[in-house]
Structure formats: C-alpha cells, structure tokens
Image (cartoon, rainbow, N blue to C red; front, side, top):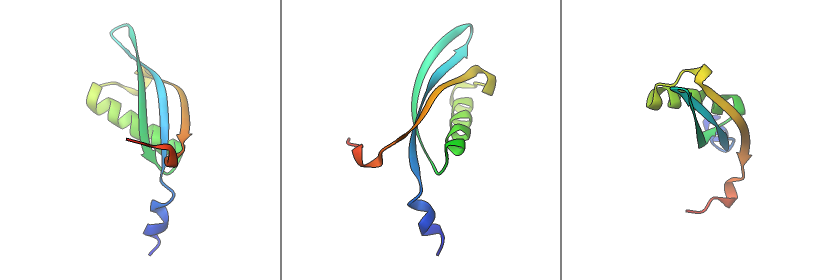
Length: 74
C-alpha cells in the first residue's frame, strides 16, 4: 500500500504574488496543498486561470514558502 506513504508527504505551501489584470496589480495570498513546490505552483496557475481567467504571464509569484502543518489553527 504505497499510497498511504504519499499522504504523509503532502505539505502546505504559502504563495504570495500579484495578478496583473487590466493594467492593475492585484496582490494575492494563497495556501496550496501539494507534495512538491513545483506541484503547488502548477495548482496555483490552474486555479487562478479557472477562477479569474488569468493566464500564466499575468501571474507574478513573489514568494513561496512551506508552512508548518502543526501551527495551523482555525
């Protein structure tokens, strides 16, 4: 059952940046669950494209950091 090992590797990444639409820079902050940083970036591009009709060149990522999962409180 190798699938159970993959679930323990899932991390939360915090991505900050700007979305350029209609000549404006709109700041955004998003937390994404992924195994690797590259996967988190792809998920962000897909979600921003779906929800905001943004193309990849309109999304400017400023920073991406791994969030400690033990500090999440809601």
